[in-house]
Image (spheres, helix red, strand yellow):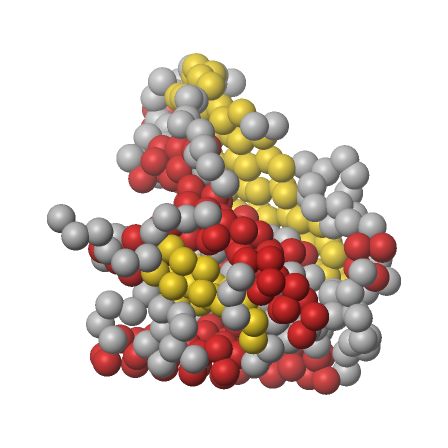
Length: 378
């Protein structure tokens, strides 16, 4: 069997995540680091010298060079959309960092560009860096829900407040935590993985009520504390609570169904398994204070091993080479973005938001905030 040629990958954006991707790609046998692109010439040249690859400061020049089969986008959020669209139109495979975009209107533009490009390039791959989908405990949660072990779901609550950040963190870059630089705060910067996993586990609600405090604890423009309530078509409810101001913080996920409760906290995944359906028990028990018998079981799961980012890049390469299914197709990135955007829109409007909401309404509000932003030079 002929060994396929390594996939030539270029990294666009050589910041914290981009530099990590450069390191990973440079050591992959089925990939070849083809180039690095960054708007800072000194940074681009430094990494290019380190890895002995060409340096670019303009995306168009890189995409037109013919050096890359695919690109990994690790730029600030707003740049994901134009870069991905330009690359896809050229038939260049794209793996973008999260979030897919700042708002769903841009995400839809990216997905439409991908669908159009596939007509000319049927094997084109478009992925997003949701590496937490590879984590063993989250895969076990997904397996438990999809297998029907919990039965009908009634509640999903995620308290994810272990994102503590000092003011120095926000002051480190002039673009950080500004509407013009990032387009959002804790929902868009820290929580895309959690929002992706939340909808991956239990789907999108029909109604969202959100409260997002802007600069409550930090001197920033965007949200640093959020509380949201979700209502589902079948009566299930959900909660999402997050903050960058709590120390010590919490990472606690509870998903309750008629068959029991899943609980993830402190690296342990517990299943409180009901002996009978609690919903049936409510209707049939003759004892007013009786409770459903349950067993507490710590669920085993296979550790995800190597860093999740590397697994996503390897999967991206395998999809290009062999057509392997993507772990995190970028077209699914709009779902977590929908959830985060709906929370912010509800907070901005002061009322619940029905899904699907008006993409233009939210995009216009965020772009108005961006025009008034106090973006500083880094």
